[in-house]
Image (tube, rainbow, N blue to C red):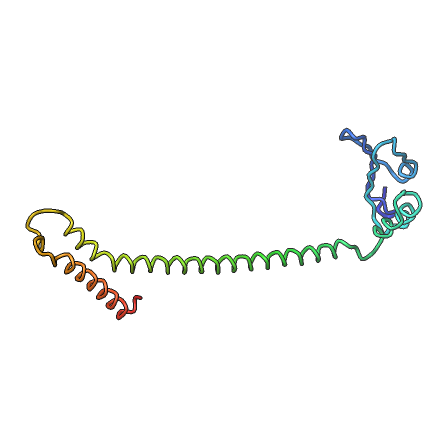
Length: 173
């Protein structure tokens, strides 16, 4: 075997992990019942071109593709590279979209927490006062007076209104 005739290496494989080296005469006399034919050819050799066209048994389109100077793997590699770049771009867009969604959810949660804090701040002092008046012990002011309950309710409403006004003045609500 010499690279001048286009044959770089050739073997008939036995299907059990073994094989034997062969040359052009054995390649031309090969039959499928002898085993699997494996050839490594230089496509520029005249003998290679002749064998592929006349004796290989390959389809004419396959032979023509194997013998072309401008091989398609470059086109496939370029197309694959474009697909990979498109996938990278899509991944980056998805990351930006996820960041935007996370920011929106965080802002919504912050608004909700702010509203709950304001409601708790407004309702905490009246809850404290009603809790103190609800302990049922002797000596509480206003127990004997019929106007004590309306007075306490009025004071609680005034405290809540005052808190709302203070929070608005501070621009917290």
